[in-house]
Length: 440
Ligand code: FES
Ligand SMILES: [Fe+2]
Image (cartoon, rainbow, N blue to C red; front, side):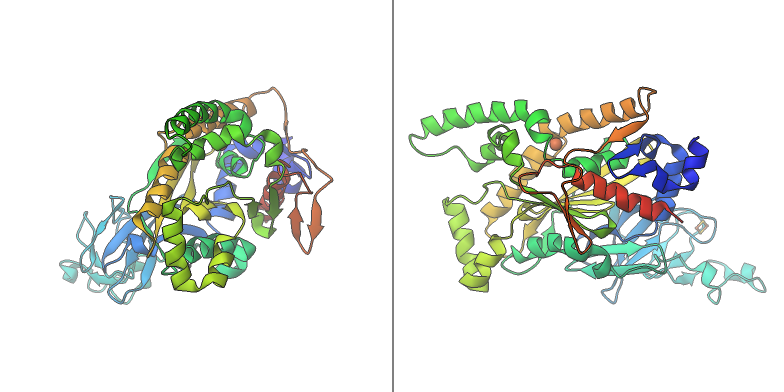
């Protein structure tokens, strides 16, 4: 039965439910890598990760090990991490500086930063053969297409397809919102990220990102504990407030389940989604006021109000990115296997903003998104349990029916209905896009 279904992926995805094999089948995973991750635009890194010529960072696109490298001409290239001689990876480290050129650690072939062959040692041995500078097969292969939007570098391994801007569509707001919040109009990566491996299929992570129903359930205990401490600290401050970072956690308990329905999800082609509604992280404390002052100086009051008024909590750029732009956080999803997924958790500095604003983003990074927090641990446990349940014979379908039939569709955009922020519309939209990508 599965064999027949595989020929037609649309039969595995119904408007309000999905076959469990979509999450657990090895062959489907391989096809997903080929038809989705190794075809569409995938986020490779931020250009500030490689500021100087020769700086590189390694990254996975689908099953392909890749290198992001800054050339002498300032251009950022994306190359396959594979030596054309006998296939050795050129870079074994996560990041570094390769100097003037790459030198393969196996037989010392050398390559320019754009992948072109520079030299083969003792090349007389190749005279009269097909190997040498005239043969493009002796260059390190490049990603078919590389584009940069406001410092965020994406690559597509397919020659054809939409441009990055066409692909991102409305989800491009994730990068605009993040950069516009910087007085200098751009962000800078904090050089290292957290890496978490979850024992579940990659789609479970993405579905959880805009699942506004789960926080009040899954993260309630953590939120409640933080709220208790927050109250004690506020009492001690005699009319003052506890540090803002407590609110980042207590909100999981104080924003009750019905309040999440006030948010809205907007779902776009290619599987992207936005969750609107922004938790109250703009109090009138001295740090925020100092930041507002710098921003007003940089942009003028009208533009400033517009920038800080952007009402976004989360943007999901399918199939590999979850962005929380108002807090400068970004999670990149790298599938490792059908039941193993790496997430890289990055955060950014707003260029030109006071240090205290960076500290706030860092607090959110540590308290909500890092592997050290219970928030992350609670999600991870559910991801693993979901995958175990889906791999069982306990049922064939995954239900995505919450508020099904009440979505509002207009010009290819699907919004969850009024007071339906906890709708499963984002999951339905992701699976609709998935079926489209998967159909050859
Ligand atoms: S494998 Fe790279 S030089 Fe031989
Ligand atoms: Fe969560």
